Image (cartoon, rainbow, N blue to C red; front, side, top):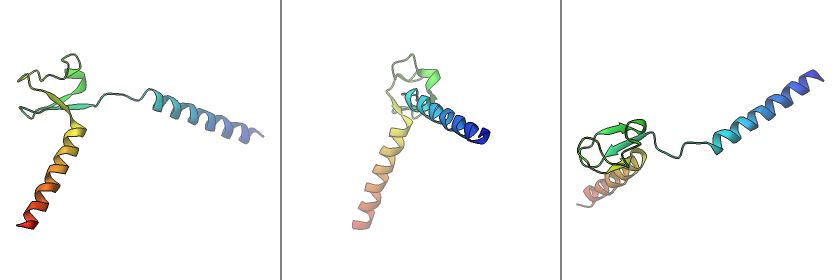
Length: 84
C-alpha cells in the first residue's frame, strides 16, 4: 500500500510541475539579433529598450525567427542554383 501512495504522490507532483511549467513558460525569446549590425543580445540585456539595439539603434529580431527566415532564404537560393 505504501508503494502505491508514493507512486500516486509522484504522479500528482509531476503533473503539477508540468502544469506550472506550461502556464508560466517565458513569453520572450532568450536572444535577440540586430537586423542592422547583426549583433546578438541576451534578452535580459535589452528588455528595457523596446527591441531597439543599444549599439546602432536598429531593430532587434527574435533569434529563433531569424534562424527560420535564414533557412527559408537559403532554401530559395539553393533552388535557384539548380534551375540555372
